[in-house]
Length: 349
Image (tube, rainbow, N blue to C red):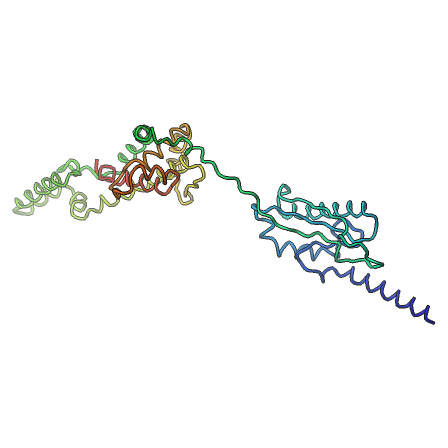
């Protein structure tokens, strides 16, 4: 009778273990389980695999992460067989992840075979038949600026002068084209509004003098016909100067972006909202800059970072800018903008 009871208990234990093995969904979702003696994904474990990937998707797809797959088998069988089995399981998960968009080059497999437990007795631990993902950040290579290495305190003054010449030769034609395309309408009575305040005042006085001589309707008609209604509006509202100023500034900003993208290799130019003409100008300037040597690009940096382009704080000397700011793309762009922000480049020629 006792032998019979022991046999019944043994049967129950066998069915109990089999039932546990058939329900991998009870396991945590941060692992990839396998069925007994299986080395690939099966229908029984597919749901858990998908949930594991969904839970850890952001880490799997993070290109800065190395994915290490620690793969295991249970204790039954020979160690050599178990090691090969766990390695095959790791490769099965690697293929699964690659199909989900994870780069194979970022996936490593650490096959362990069976866990380091000396005696399982007669039991078979389903929980050991897993591949466990672990994430490790890629070692970040120190960035070496290919342009900044030409920095030389001894030649700074000459580099600034050379940088100015390079800039004028490079974008001078583009600036002239922009000035010709966007400018104040030439007025017969003024020829062209003067950039000099005193000269402009004299021009306005001449207009006012003519206005005083208007005695009747005929005189008024002749006066309006002479200067043109558009000139009269522009003179007293400055709407024309604002429009020209804005149109030119947009194109100058494109030039600045193109220069920054070439003189600072890691800088990403903001070109998303450019129209066709702006893109054409951007790539035209960028192409010309790409033909310069890195030494010449450094000189452009020296010109618009260490070189003075506007009234700076007297403490913030060229020496300090040279020592601390030569990799500062924001200062480079800001100083370029100040260079353009001069009346002769704004709206009057």
